[in-house]
Image (cartoon, rainbow, N blue to C red; front, side, top):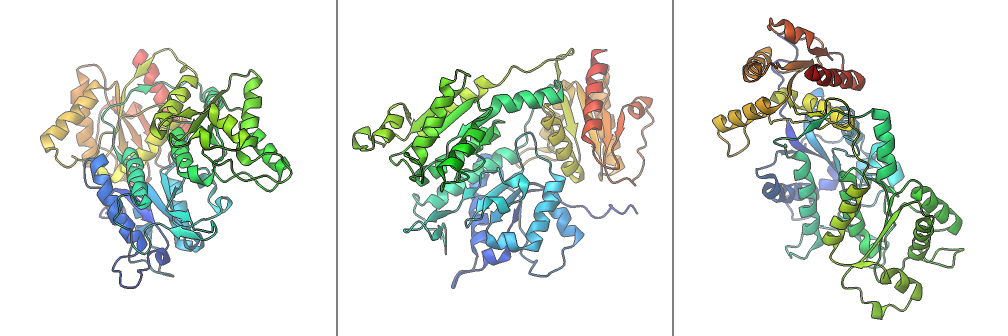
Length: 497
């Protein structure tokens, strides 16, 4: 028997990685803080996802327990990792292994990660894994009355009051995860421009400077930063509390560095101007505003957007410097301003470079056992500038088998190319899919192609067609980005004849 047969690992939507001490049950409570959060997150996900989500978390593994290959494979077989960040998580050897294992399997797609951070308790950003330092956590704590002792939301149990910020955080996180987990039905696949040139242009056009906010506007900063990143933008500073506030010289140097290359500058202003900076005449808000205005005056084409909440009354502002900033700020609801920012960001994007051959539609398909491999290939292609159709491996809840087959057949039929992914799936499944795709596409003079991924040792496919043998990419020793890119480009050249 092949060593991978009989060891099917299910593909989970979400894996929750947490330190077990963060899920200790308070006195009189059956469920701990993380288990309770999982329950409400699962409930909130049903509406935007359109089905019950598959969320996995390990209840059995305790301190010093053996970390088995099966457990590590469970982590690798998830579409998204929800990380419950706390000092306990940072100190947990198992949690760090989970994280490293997931990141190794899941390369970033463009400017997006498949990791979502729940910050249960403040942790210094510089202590995080490098790939996580620029992610925006969903903060499940608030400053206490003295602004020193954090108050954990939902502890010991969430208040059922609908105005409790705990529920707003759950709903926000659920929508982020649903958008990530949801499978697209169709997308357009375009030939990428020169990769090096594209990355250079993207970095220049999509760097967004988002001024550090006051504590009252911290949640708005997090939401806006996340929206910008999901749109492909690069946010500077990388976190809302990244600037040094004990030295005017260090602060202005950090701001100047972050403004380099920024085409869009944004400042969220409330009724507070922020901390007074030692050695400077101004506050955090006024110093940042002055730096942005100075750069705007240079005539380099930067756009500067400011926003103030509708409830801020200018007549109640006694600080003239703060009043000056607020006077020119857009006064509207936050969602309206967020849309304005995203529309501006889209306008600043350079027109896509083109190549002979224009665009084509590609379908990347895999069985359940090869969904992680399919996701890895999709991430590589998206990171290189392509978009990919990846039909689900099985019907979603509410779909009949016949409707599911008809939908997948239509995607294949309408595609210019179909790529079959062969990793751990059975040869019989691959062969059946090849015959199915060949029948659908053969009348149009097209045939499916194959990408073989790990493991290296597995049964050979019983497909006699010479065409498939000449249109197969062998990646049994591991997926290599450059080889995949060259293979897909050749598909485009073959199509154009």
